[in-house]
Amino acid sequence: MALDSGRRVLCFDGRIEHTLDFSLVNGLEEGGLFVVRSFGGDGRPAVLLAEALRRRRATVVVYDYCLYSCASYLLFASSTAFVFKGTLVAWSLPVSEHLCSSFEEARDDGPKRLENKVCSYAPPEYQAAYEDLKEMNKWYVWTRAIDPSMEYPPQTAFVRRVLRNRFGERGRYPSNLLWTWNPRYYASTMKTRVVYEAYPENQDEVDTMTASFDLRVIYDP
Image 1: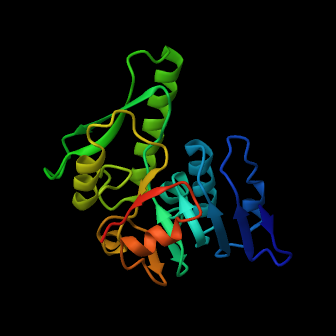
Image 2 (image 1 turned 60 degrees about the horizontal axis):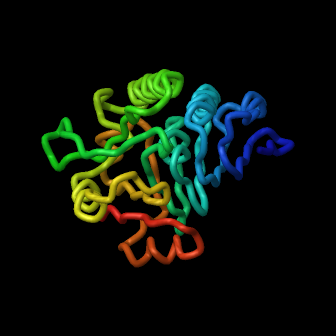
Image 3 (image 1 turned 60 degrees about the vertical axis):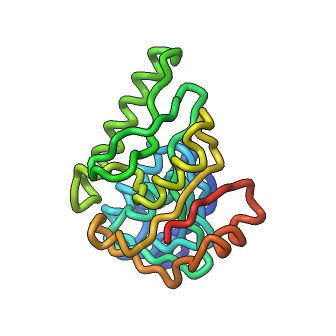
């Protein structure tokens, strides 16, 4: 993470680790730019970073890729975000040896959602930590979503059907499986105004964007 000498631009490029020091955010001029490229990482520091950016009224600028917890938390950190053309923004579920996946009824009565639950064999301390993470996620959605009861991370009906058709019987959720979320849904769902210079046009374009990574990304048309 680096802050320019004028305190107008703060850049972050890397993984969101639990030891992340984001004290530089406090030096960012109010209304400045937060430029990010990240594969995601730990959800808790991602939420804390998002809160710090919101206090500075920063504009989030995403380039190249913003995946996992970067998409879930940093994209909607503040009131405005801009996504450059050719940038892959994609969501996923948390993955752990102690998490088991299943398809559950969705609140919108549409196709079932892919969800994670703590496996029965997980140690009690993991169960407690995951419950804390769920509460934090619930609080984050309450502060950023138009409807605080929305299920997060987002899964459109199309994405849910693809997940069920392709991976419904394969057991543990693969860590390299993600999906995009078409920005046409954002205005009615999230408080943040997100502007895409160009959302990918099709699955082929997404596949090209992920060719150098060990990722499978479902395109949400």
